[in-house]
Length: 144
Image (cartoon, rainbow, N blue to C red; front, side, top):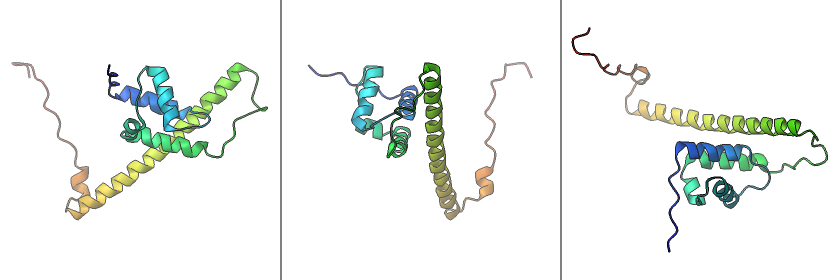
């Protein structure tokens, strides 16, 4: 009997995977990520599937770099559960902010590449910055 194929990764699933990476603690491997996604969704995806999506691949790389050389908190961890949760949330936000900054840098680099290539093809900045045409509006017949 053949295993059924996991459903395609939708924008919502990709966002959930990236958020999982933002909050990741401890050792991170593609296999561990696949295990975590399977535990939360019930579907098994391969590392090759994850790597096909730049958002996931970039978030994975960024988180892996961020985790290198860090030690888990030991004795200094607060006892109050609310404080621990607030600190964990702050860590997730810091990780997300760092990932978004890295993604923004990649987009800026892509924009520069496009601008240079457009200029080489004779496309001016004025042409690129021209406003888009307004979409035709649905007008009721007989009413102006």
